Image (cartoon, rainbow, N blue to C red; front, side):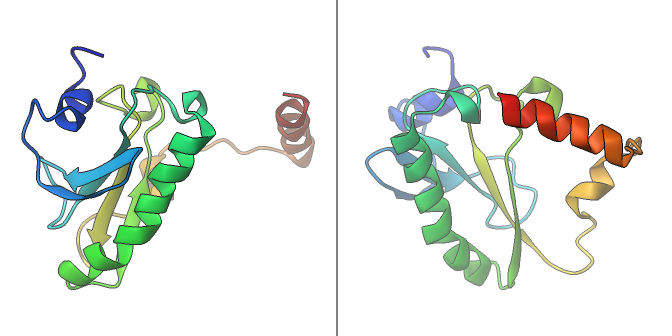
Length: 139
């Protein structure tokens, strides 16, 4: 994608602080970090959403996430991180290229668990949960 900032980083057209890469994925420091060590892992091929990815690219992205998370936490002098994907603009995805955030976390950093993001949570009955489960399983 010619206008995609992450595609430009992968192509070397925009400089980045590359943490590590493999044949199909690249990890680099977020230019606008939420914490010291905040890293993004992207597939080298352009995909807007996780479900669009080829299995080999998804495996490469998550292999890289698995490989570098401990090093990121260690470098940030913490033992925890939030690993997150915003999958589509309605979910908060600002760059329409799949990217995994690895954000080092510590007690009192001002951020909360993923559940704290949702102020208006549904109260689903057992029947509604079963209906959702059925819809997912039929896909």
